[in-house]
Every structure is written in structure tokens, then in C-alpha cells.
Length: 338
Ligand code: 5GP
Ligand code: MN
Image (cartoon, rainbow, N blue to C red; front, side, top):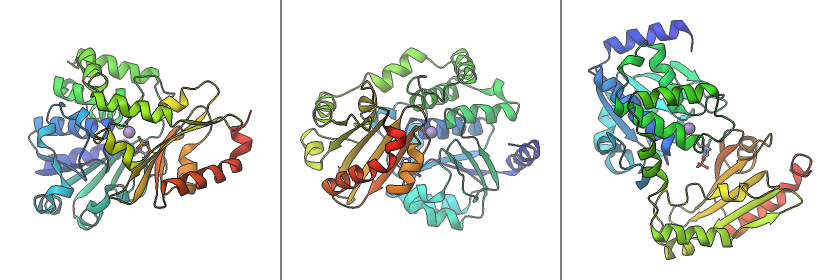
């Protein structure tokens, strides 16, 4: 983000009363952590700030400071639409194309606000007046920290802000193990701990709060794991029936796909989850090394993401989706086989 943009943003912020902050649909730890971190920062500065999430977020995030003030567009669009209409600034965080906001897209497209994008996905769209996009960053939370630093306001990071930003960096880096974790990431994390993020508590809140039924669903997912040794690929399926049997709640399958990737020799993993009411199969892709799952998800499953973590969907049956997946895999034989 160039200095000129920072000057313009500083000036826009000094004039702004109403600010709306938006994460992507199906928000994860980074999306909710970054929006809430920025929310606390801007509130401290005296703005009227609202976080509007396109839809519900997972229960494992329902302890984050300020989460009780998040509005859910899907449930409460009558309240949300006027806020979007009257916003002076709209921050869009952890996504780079308005289509990622689902039903909120129309209302955002019509808004007269100044749009500021902060995001770490490749290939950003051009809707924002100010685009802070950096695909080398571990997470949007790390970028919000850098953004606050660019505004020369690191000193005003409170324990609440630190907690939210720590959470998103932790979840998007798989607890600091993915390649996107840099020495700079660790410096930011160190400073967030100094500023009041209770790291052990945060890890516990996110990772040690499983219900028994979630662990049993993980058992089913692991039973369903299929491996294609030749193409170094593993995938998991979960049908609606299996989800129902184990009382599935949003967020319960978070991280399941990584078990496929943890197998020795596997460099490409996927999970296919049937959502009968939406009529779609939600897919997550993960990879190790250079195999680009962003390209794969865009090419075959209406999705996208990063080189090593992407998502997508399919509107055919679970069985047909798996047939399709297995039939496109050989196209990548050169990259996948040893
Ligand atoms: P997850 O598999 O955890 O849902 O998502 C992994 C990454 O891919 C995240 O960075 C997420 O934003 C991105 N992603 C997930 N689903 C989609 C999708 O349908 N479209 C696009 N463009 N990106 C997605
Ligand atoms: Mn992210």
C-alpha cells in the first residue's frame, strides 16, 4: 500500500462517522479476527463501527471480544441495508471479490462509501478505492496489524485488538506451521502477546473445545479417507446423513482436510462435504509444496484461495463430484506423481 493511499485513508478516516466492516461468507478465524480487531481499533478512535457478516460464523469463535455485536446479514438484512447505504467507509476483509459476500453483494455494489480492501488472496478484483493486497502475508490479521502500523498507531493496540489479531494469524497459519509463516509473522505475534493476547488461553478456546459428537464425526471422516498413492492425493467425503448422525454444527469440520495431508507421501488433499439444503457440495483443498490448489479450485470447482489452501463448490451429487474429481486428477499427473 503506497504512502499516498495511507494519506488519503487517514484523511477519509478523519471525516468518517459511519464505518462498516465486512468479512467473507462462511467466515473463518482470520475473517472474524481481522474484522473484530479493526472494529475495536476504529471504535477506540471514536467512529461508529459495525461488523456485518454475510452469514453465521462458527461457535468456536463465539468468545472473541466484541463478537456479540456482529450483525448477520442473512438474518438481519433490514437492519444491515441502511447501515451499508449510510456508511462513509466500508472495509472488506479477507476476500478480494464482492461475489464472496453472497446475498450481500447487491447492497455493497450500490453503496456510495469509500471501499478499502485488506486481503491476502491472489488476483484481487478492482472494486475498492484503496486496495491493500499482499498474497505473501500469512493472514489478513497480520495485514491489519501492518495497516495499524502504517497509520502509526501500534501503541493504541489494546488487549482486545491483540486477542482478535492473534487468533486469526494462528488459525490461518495452522498454528504457525504453514509456509506463509515468516519471521515477520512471529515478530507481530510476539508484539501481540506483549500487548495482552493470552496465547495459551486463545489456543485452548479454539482447539480444545470439541464436543464428543465432533470427535465422532472426525472418526467417520477418517474412516472415509481414500488415498491415490500414485498421484499422492488423499480425499475425505462426508454425506448429509453422516453429518446429521453426529449433530453437525458450522465449524465442526474445520481442519479435517489436514488429516489427509498429514499422510506420508501425500501432497494434495481434499474434503467434500454435502450440504443438502443448499444443494451444494462444499470442498476444501490443501497442498504441500508447489501444487497450486487455487488454480485447481478455479479451474474445476468454481472456487479459489491460495497456492496451498483453497475452497470451492459443486452443484452435482456427492458421488458425481467424486467421479469428476477423480477424472480431472490425471491431468495433473506431471505435478502430482513422483
Ligand atoms: P476453506 O477450505 O478453509 O473453506 O478455505 C480455504 C481458502 O480458500 C480460504 O482462504 C478461503 O477464503 C478460500 N475459499 C474457500 N472457498 C472459496 C470459494 O468458494 N471461492 C473462493 N474464491 N475462495 C474460496
Ligand atoms: Mn485469511
